[in-house]
Amino acid sequence: TALDTETRVDLEEKAQSAEHDFTIDELNPRRSCMQRLFLLIRFIAIMGSLAMATGQLVEITYGVLANVEYVLRVYMIIFCFVMIVNELKCTRFVSSGLLSNWITRGAIYTFVGVIGIQENNVDEYGDVVDKAALAFIEIVAWGMVGCGILYFLMGVLCCQIVSNKINSNYEKRLVKAEHIKEVLNRTKNKRSLELT
Image (cartoon, rainbow, N blue to C red; front, side, top):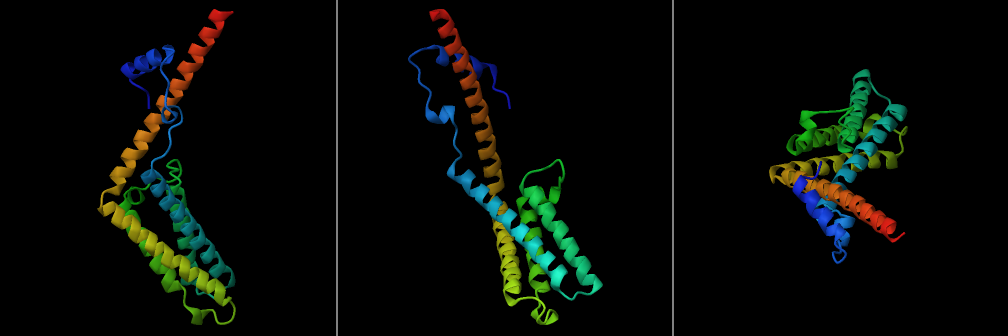
């Protein structure tokens, strides 16, 4: 994102005037509370997906599974990987229209969580898998359902639009801060050359 010409000229004039001081936020922009909240939700979704994939690996490794159940768990691991990559915004690897919209993302996360809950049937493992591991898998699956519901509700309440605007504003402030720093460095260098 480039600064428009008017903004560049204005910043250069301010930087060259000795009496103008830039605020800390102009030089080092901070994230807003809402932006931090959205980042926290993304972090929770990443950790939930990672834990879900780990739980699926535990089931594959220690569970006595039929072929269909084994294939289902492999698909769940793939879904979790795609969800993690999507949350990290690595569009180079995964660019899904379904996961980019928060409403459908919430529905998919909820679906994955419900499948995880359904897979977690204590009777099919017997004494092979520790009860703590099964409890972990069930908690993670419910967490995925909760995360999915949260994303769905935020999508319905248009929070994705708010998030996009906040992120765009933050990116603009970062570009502006970089430009201010460049101009200040140039001005400082010019003044030091004039003094010598």
